[in-house]
Image 1 (cartoon, rainbow, N blue to C red):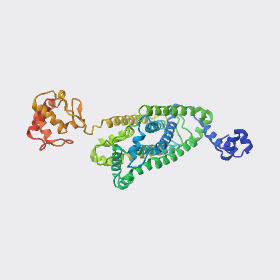
Image 2 (tube, rainbow, N blue to C red):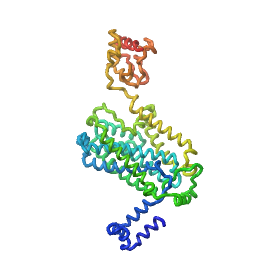
Image 3 (cartoon, rainbow, N blue to C red):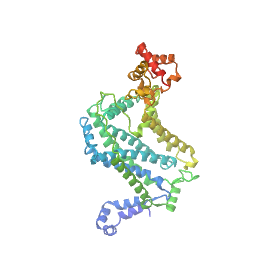
Image 4 (cartoon, rainbow, N blue to C red):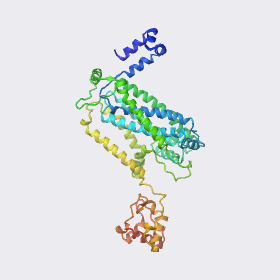
Amino acid sequence: MSDQARIDEANNTPPAVTEKHYGLFLGWIEDRTGLISRLNAVAGHRVPRRSRWAFVFGSATLFAFILQVVTGITLAMFFEPSSATAYQSLQRISTPGTAEAVVRGLHYFGASLMVVMMGIHLIRVYLTAAYKYPREMQWISGVVMLFLVLAMAFTGQTLRWDQTAVWSVVVGAEQASRFPWLGPILARFLMAGDTLNAATLSRLYALHTYWFPALLFGLIGLHVFLVLRNGISEPPVPGRRVDPRTYKQQYQARVRRDGVPFWPDAAWRDTVFGSALILLTVFLAWKFGAPALSKPPDPSLINADPKPDWYLIWYFSILALWPYGITNLMIILAPLLAIAGLILLPLVSNKGERAPSRRPWAIGIVIVAIGMIFSLTLLGYREPWLPRFAAPPLTAQQVNSTVPSVVRGAALFHDQSCILCHRIDGQGGIRGPNLSEIGERLTRDQLSWRIQNGAASMPPYAGVLTTDQLRDLVNFLETRH
């Protein structure tokens, strides 16, 4: 008997029979709502027998979303979305040892968990080509959810409303403003005005707590409905190609012949894995907590590090590393190409081979993508493109000379901010070349010429340094070998 036939039978069953079958209370509920028979039909739908641990990441993402909803609602009870009091209220929430601090930690690590699980789920679906017919809309709804989750992550970071968060909003609005025609409108919408103002935080709070979750609820409902309608994709078999003309009949025949009920044969893995991840999140929140707030917000101070959370650091690195002349173009073009490519994928390739062993290029794309994201993330934390503004002066041991001119040159190396971009003996910035052995590479005349004329990313110091200062600085650099 089909699931729909069972539901129809339940709808036509007399109340006395229903109450006898389910008991007095549940029978009354079932007779009035039909809810129990429908839940039974969902739990009992058949799935491919070989759907094992590789298939748990989608439900793990749902576990993480539920955690975010529960902790987010709890935090909203204590957070004050006003630019005048938000920072202070978050400081109270973050007080170590309090239940509120643990909840904030759960929300922070839960966001990371959701991004990671969604990313792994996306990779699994891509490698097994589970986006092919008839699951194109499942893939597209998942891609839209991914970008919504990233939007929630960005707006969640800005709600910290500290110095970093405020400048993150400014940077985000600056990037949005570069979009042709719609840019100024998008930037003004994000900031709720032409500049940061009292309404900016309220705008971001509404997006993060109302609009984005509401859209996610709708998309998750659509995604789950499509999973139930089209079934869970079976593990691919080399040589078994997807043909839209026959796939549904073949899939239903395989599931009837070799499938198992979703509950409990398949759902127990989802439950065990999801519960383990929640316990891990609780441990991380208890042990490490959410990141500390930076200084109170002050848009008049530019000494800030508006860096996104770790899952967007790689994109931050790309923006920093692109040549300045094409930055505007790539800020717009790169996300559009990524979104278009992901959405069009199942529309241009919805049939044929699914097995990764027959699609080695798919494995290569995943390896290259993961390698690039990993490398760019590491680079983003090093920030080689930024001067080290907090670099201290070189020590006497590093200067390693008592010659007065060399010592004065070492002091100038710090006072003229050379050390912010150049490293000597492990100290200083890495934006420019390492000068630890510059005395072996350049002559005295070459050093003088470079200091006075500068380079592509180095200002000229001619007219800035006196003749005596230039001589002292060159004397110091000549000793570096």
